[in-house]
Image (cartoon, helix red, strand yellow):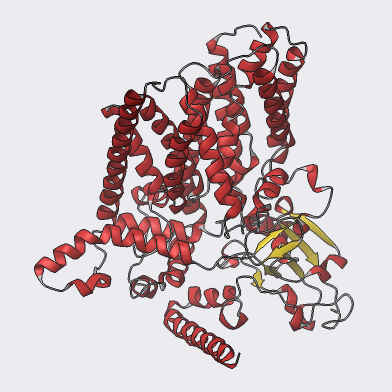
Length: 638
């Protein structure tokens, strides 16, 4: 491979980032507010306007605050006299109800929903592009400029990134700061000094402020250190005493950097919680000294409380390849990754593996990792194994977005490929030229895939599904996250429909985007529904509802297959009859609440009348106590 001008590589990087911005921003402009964005946007605005973190404690604040910045600057309106605000601060776990009502009101009642969601997503798009720049720069360092460009091409055309990157979520933010932490950690281990320690502390603090799963970094660091004992890198001292001093210096740097990260987290939480009542620490007392102590302890208290909520929140069942599992299964994320990644990227990984094995075990030993980058390359592998292992062992498995850190680290594994092919070609390996052309062809195929999939990136699946319907393969935000409501509205306008039924996948009011629609449960069709058009989330066909009976009716996919439009017959078959809705015993409840209630209806009632929050809470508590009592009685009888 001939050496090319750095300007060509730089121009290619700029074009790829511009293409990514165009595709990602164009796609989300066509989407309604997705499931979690309702809670995240409202919470982020309240953090900045009120310096009160009572809402959405189960996620750290960084991404939410960044999303809220343009909204606050533009003067977004929030009514803190609404009952949902005071209700959310009146006890632990009440915010689970209040944050959805408050967030929905902020987006759809107090402000224009389209412009509010648009401006909240712009900082997320910016973070996504920054991560692309980081992937490019680190790829250049781990391989060559062409390796960096290859990594950026895979990243910028990845439907998973294009789908979730611009949304107001925590996944891209934590991925960015985990990758920055990885690099800063390796740099600090190579050359511990004040600058590298500070950069590590800032990156690590950013990760801890992004998502609680960043706690896996506490496992990555010792795993990396142990790997150096098992397989040392060339720059480690050989003499025992010198090696001991070398390790001690780096352990001290790790401690200092971690303290720096902790101080950053404390400072951010301290500022954002300044006006939050300290009643939850009332056991410390009520005099002036106790009040000061309570205020000082609020940041770690809120962080640890949010971490506990995150750790003990009810885990949904895992659904993969048509089967629902009550808990996570080790093969969930590997299968999901294979189904939702472009085939060209999967083949690129295979090619990189083959070329890497040839370069390492061939007749001529090649150094495909640039000198001085051994620690960084080791860190990529160790962090990848830790995060991937945690995903596979987790009991919390339902979305490919939770695999974002591993996905980006897999992309970085492509960095040495062009350099390795160049060295193999110089060494006379006959297949090297073909490998170069194949790499270029796969990169081009990735671009074509991203353009062809536009603008429907959330429901993207490759051809490895074997032509099976998507709802028989995956579920949740891997297909539909309530983003397709504008397509439903367009369908109704084009057909001149004045009324329709909608079975949507979310806790928000779908009439914000589809005013003519009525919330419906496709399992509970009644004779009066006959002759109507019905729009059903693809997740509710089999996994979260039992509505396979609808597939016998005329239908067509909407929003890239994330929703289906059905024309109901004038006469609906009786319940349990062939071609009719299922019997009650065969129902599946989406986010079923206590007593198998449809939580969507509960939240809809609270959205329309926030005063219903307290009675709803009391009803949930009574139902929960009854369930516990029945469990105790059953155990006593045994």
